[in-house]
Amino acid sequence: MRKLAVVAATLVLGACATQTPAPKSIDAQYSDQQMRQAQQQALAESSQQSLALKRKVAIARMSNETSYGRSLLRTSSTDVVGKQLTDMLSNALAESGNFIVLERPDLGRLEKEAELVGTKLDLVGVDALIIGSLTEFGRKTVGERGFLSATKRQVAYAKVEFRLVDASTGQVFHTASGAGEASIEKGSVAGFGSTASYDATLNDKAIKQAISDSVNAFSQTLLNRKWHTYFLSKQSGSYFVAGGAMQGIKPGMTFDVETQGKTVTSPQTGFKIKLPGQKIATIKIISTFGDTEANEGSVASVVSGSLGGHQLKNLMIVESK
Image (cartoon, rainbow, N blue to C red; front, side, top):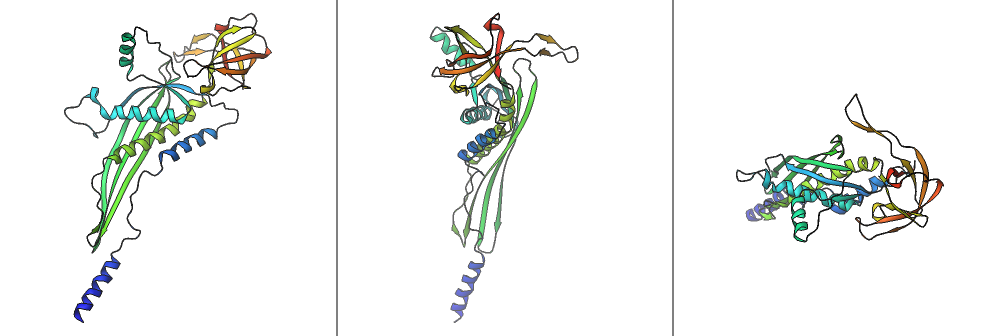
């Protein structure tokens, strides 16, 4: 009878120690696909007049300003985390479908490769340079212990800071930050269950989520900047325009043609100011050509106004207001 009472008491205590809710593995708050869908949805909610044409961007520098990943044997030239941040940001920008990402960090390697094949590297200017760093990173382990139960939860947190720089003036025109967190939790009852050993992948997941968060923050700022392009040539009454389908240009779109305004220096700020040009015509896209972002273009015709008396190289094509 006494043995039965002891067994019953043990079962009751075990039941009381059962975890509620049951321990489960927790990843980043949102999956990669959900974060990409959120980016695209946020950009789609902009004004219906916005054409959301792709902007050209380049990552100038990414660095690790935290103690994470540092050692006495590593220098700024061997910043492994900084290179990881660059790769993650490049992927996030490319996957968003709204940017043309140009290589800058490994420019030296590209120049050497061009020399080997006997060609010259033809660099393209960008609309904005992205400079940033990992400013916060930390890990912690929290847990609870009952009479016969225990839980252990590992949490990784990361924060990144970015600034967008106008490549023509060096002016910082926007800043953005993003934060991310990833965790995993395991538990046991009466000595039975799984244990949460050190999971190094949580670091990468937290950083990746922070970068995705920041891309959401500055994407709309870049897309809100006025997009423009130029004429390539004229042939048989049709005009060839730089930029095609991969930049978001579609047949039927209309654009304004303006003269390029005079550039003056502001005595107040010292910055170069480009005066507004004069609208002289409207063109309509007939078709597009090219199979890469580097060689694509469009064919257009004039639907109103006239380009007569103007050299094509002195004209600029902008989004219709």
